[in-house]
Length: 222
Image 1 (tube, rainbow, N blue to C red):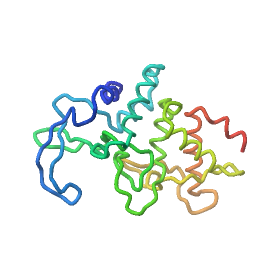
Image 2: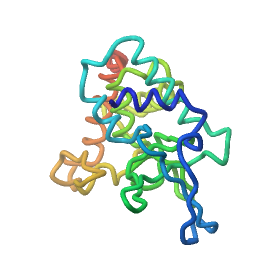
Image 3: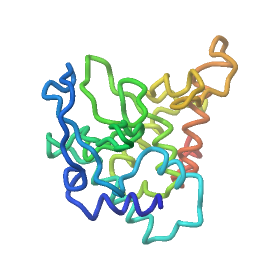
């Protein structure tokens, strides 16, 4: 089912083709009050489907990996402003936001804050930092060779490893701290000493990414 959901992205032009508009209450983020509902029995992927694929292997073959890469690449596009960050709700007797729903466009591996899904949002003066969890999941899925943005991210992660083998890549700290529904990569008890510090967790996360991206051999140069 997870594969079918990603495949659906390639079968339609955008979420607009598989949803219908509905009038709601205007808000600061949505002055018109118009939002979209998925049509009945429609398909569209979210973070949980990517999680499933990242942690299973029976689906993996060249055809499926290339399909997944093409689907992710399409959602990472940003050439149509009306589609960037566009998601839809489900109807369960009332509209229900689909937490983790990937956007029609604007899917990102960088973010300024912790979100259920890596949706492109307005940069409010904060730097965009790598969302390590999504990069790891995509690397586990084997799509890195087919997505230039991922290859660039991994190159930056490699270049941030110093002569002592410590990675200091610019990452979103909220992904590590505060174990919960959308975060929890921190393994160190705290980040208060040299041996239990922030960079230890970042380095471990970076090594996982490099391993699953088949780039671990590049660490030999360090």
